Every structure is written in structure tokens, then in C-alpha cells.
Amino acid sequence: MNITSKYRSLSVQAKAALWFTICSFLQKGISFITVPIFTRLMSTEEYGTYTVYLSWLQILTIMTSLYLFNGVYDNAMAKYEKQRDEYTSAMQGLTLVITGAVFALYCFTSGFWEKILNLPKSMILLMFLEALLSPALSYWSGRQRFEYRYRILVCVTILQALMNPIASLVLIRINGGTAMMRILGIVGVQVCICVPIIVFQFCKGKEFFSKEYWGYALRIGIPIVPHYLSGIILNQGDRIMIDKMVGKTEVALYGLAYSIGMLVQLFISGMNSALTPWMYSKIKKGDIRSMRKVLQLLSIVVVGIAVALMLISPELVLIFGSPKYREAVYVIPPVAASVFFIFIYNILSMPQFYYEKTQFLMAASMAAAGANVVLNFIFIRLFGYIAAGYTTLACYMLYSVGHYIVSKRILVNEGIQENLMNPGFLLACSVFLIGASIICNLIFPYRILRYAILLASAGLVFWKKELLLKTMADIRKKIKSGEDLKRMFRDFPVLCRFFLTVTRKTIQ
Image (cartoon, rainbow, N blue to C red; front, side, top):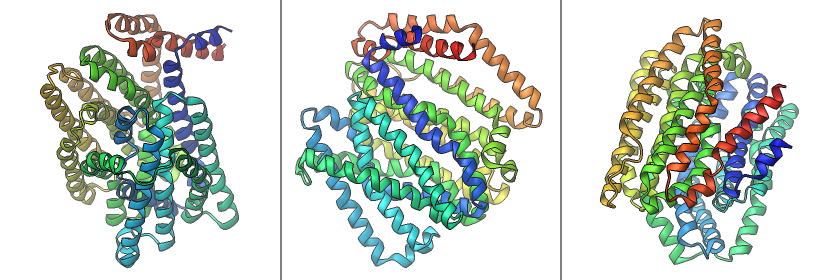
């Protein structure tokens, strides 16, 4: 009853923030929990092929959708508040047209692209089908988050997260543990979920072509394409380069370790979804100072989760990958540290989207992506696939620095002198994370020491939990304007006490 009472006292925005985070955990968590099954049913080479497929899929999705369902769509939800149905329908039509054009180009030069992608034609066709369908779900999900309609989104997300591995497992049991069966299962589920959404959104919006909507989206979206493409190169390019320079077995080892390192994303992706509307409203009011206090507190939480994951990396590799993936453990610390910088640059890019100054994104993004390619080319040859984890960390740091400079310039031009994030604070977090990743690599063989550090840190947090909750409450009280903050973070201390109560009752 105590837990139920605390939950009911939360505002709609706080509940949405809670459920979006849980939803993100469930979606990626269910997918990741099934990894040990697929790594055991599939050979490392087949698992490497599947990993390469996913990397190329993300690049293709940028080319076929321009990522219009991302920052551009959030802007449009505010700009076209009364025409959201029509805008969503028109964006869906635009995505279908672009995808058709890219597919036609592929058909005329299929041999060339099959050689570049190093994948069979059947997989490339499935890749196009998935790229055609998945944006519809992204548009729909984005709108549910923007309007805090979390119930149906949670249901659809959990359904998709459960059906993807189940369908793949059935196909693998029938036809063998190949990458093709794994991909077919995922695409089949996408067809079942996305086709009804496409029909629903077209029927509701009744727009396929709109000069105004298409023009607005393309005007903002096209300059961002190099930014998104650069981000994918940072995130997925190392797998492609390892495939070309070393082999698919090494891609499997690196891909598994990278996925483990990115587990922190389970937390921050849901948090970012909940933060976006709130940050937009704070930027609109020019209230940067109060926003910075909350963001820095959340940054400390991200750092803590990243370090905890580093400490248990060897056990996670054995659980999710089996002993044949053991050597990949040294990739995890730099990748886990990279997640902090992903969180930071997502925050720092908000002013660029809000003020529609997205052309500045290209310089920072392309510089980091170019550095990633060059560093990978040099260090993978010298030190093998493990070096890609460290080049990734270095490039995400460069990425964050670039976004900090650009966002600071934009805010100053808009008459806002406050920094979105304190540079001294960011430097301290960066040094701590890099030091932690180095130390964790050295103490991996000493399990007792690693767990002693982890338990001591957890004990300190539990011991000082009242101080932490009081700090959160003080931050909330110091913010003067914050009706929009009250709606989302009004009950942040209550939300933390809710989690603590659940944990305590579960232990008891």
C-alpha cells in the first residue's frame, strides 16, 4: 500500500518519465538477456555476420529516412501542435519516397554494393524492408513520448521486445543457427507491428505529400544527415572496419563486448526521452542555471553506473558470451566510459535543435567520425580489434568537446551567457572515468578486490541516501520558475524513495 500510494502521488510527467525509463530497460534488456542463447546457438562467424548486418542497417536507415523521426520530429511536435496527425502522416510519406529512391539506386548497382557490404543479396533485401518499415514505429513512439502517453507505448514495446527473439529462436530451431534466421525473425515481427501503424497513421493524418511539412523537415533534416551519419560511424564503423581488416569472428567478439559496455544506455536512453520536452521548455525560458544543476546530478548517476558495469565485466562476458568470448572483456571499460560522453553530447545538442541551427552539428560530428576511421585504421592493424574500444572513447570525447563549443556559441548568440554544463565538472568526470577504465583492466583477474570496491561504493550510497534525497529536494526548491520542472521532477525525491521502498520490501 505504501508503494502504491507513492506511485499514485506522482504527476503524469513523473509517471511518464518512470515508465519510459522502465520501457527502455525492458526493450533493450529483453534483447540483451537473449544474447547468451544466440551466442551459443550460432557460431562466432554467424554471430559476426548478424552484427555486421545491424551496423549496415543503421547506416542505411539514415540514408532512407534522414532520421526525420529524431530531433526534427520533436521540433515539429511543438511547431505544429494542432496538426500533429497531418505532419506525422506526411513524414511517413516522405520516408517511403526516399526509401524507394535509394532502393532503385541499389537495383541498378547491386553488384557493387554487395561487394562493399560483404553480405548476401537476400540479407540486403531484408535490410531495405526493415529500413522501410521501422521509421513508422519511431514516428509513433516519438509522439507517444512527447504527449506522455506511456501505457500503450509500453505495451507495444514489450510485445516487440518479446516477439523478436521468440520468432528468431523458432526459425533457428527449424532451419539451423544462421544469421539469416535471426534476421528473418526480426523483420517478420517488424512487418506485423509496423504495417498496421503505417495504415493507422495514414488514415488519421490523410497526408502523403505536403510542401510545407516536407520543406520544413528537409530544410532542417538534410544538414543533420552528416551529423547522424558521423554518429553511426562512431557507433558502428569499428565493426565494419574489423570485418574488413580482421574477420567476422573478431566482429562477434567486439560486438558482444560493445553491447555489454553499452548496457548503461538502458538507463540513459529512457532518461533522455523524458528530459527532451523539459529541456526544450527550459531553453525557451532561458533558465539554463537551474537545468544545469539537475543535469549534473544525473551525470554523476551515469558515471556511477558505468563504473559499476566495468567492475563486473568478466562475469558479464562469461554469462552472455560463454568462455569463447573471454578475451573481449578488455573492450568493455572504454566502451562503458564512452556512454557518459554519449549522454553529454545528447544534452549539449539540444540548443542546436531548439534554435534550428543544425548546420553547426556537421563540423563536430564529421571531425569525430573522421578521427574514428583514421584511428581505427592505424590501431586495429597494430593492436587488433580491442584497440577499437579505445579509439571509440577518444572520438566520443572529441565529439562532446565539439558539441560543447557549438552549443555555447549558439546560446551566446541567443543572449544566454550561462553554460549548459560546467566545463570543470565535465573535466573531473572525464578524468575519473578514464582512470577507472584503466584500473579496471588491471584488476580484472582479482575478483574479490573488484567486488569489494563495488560493495563498498554501494554501501556508501545507501548510507548517504538521505543526503542524496535531500540534495535532490533542495535542487527542486531552488528553481524559481519551474512549473514545467514541477510537472516532471516535482516528485523526483518521492520517485527515488519509491525505488528504495521497492528494493527494501523485495530484500525483506
